[in-house]
Image 1 (tube, helix red, strand yellow):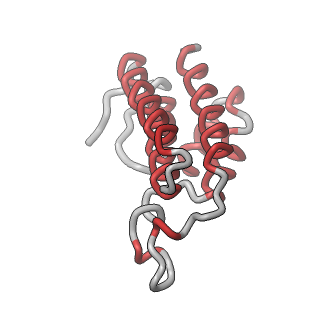
Image 2: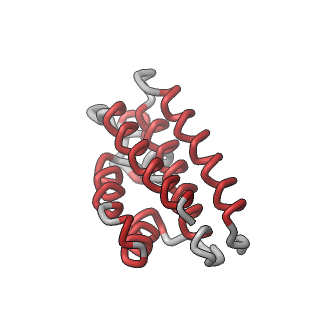
Length: 141
């Protein structure tokens, strides 16, 4: 599916990213860190897509969080630091697969058991920082 690049479409994606991040916040400290990490991934993915769309570029496919962050930072000087922020989140376990599928972990571990030491509040704070950065970026376009 190719998305038509425009500011209204970017804002629509940012709206959903905000909703996804709120859903992650609702799960904090409820013994489901894998769901917090997954929902943060979903929020970041949508916010990064929004930033691509506001550049006037069609979004035709998924490049992963790091791929989108690297491309955006390389082409938009005001997004300096985006790659480091996204990398930090990925290093904490923000991922769309490992948070959901047992096959990404050694047997007999499941995703619900795989992230016991993640600081959910710190992950959420960092994700909020990235979302604000990307919202500001879209707002300047």
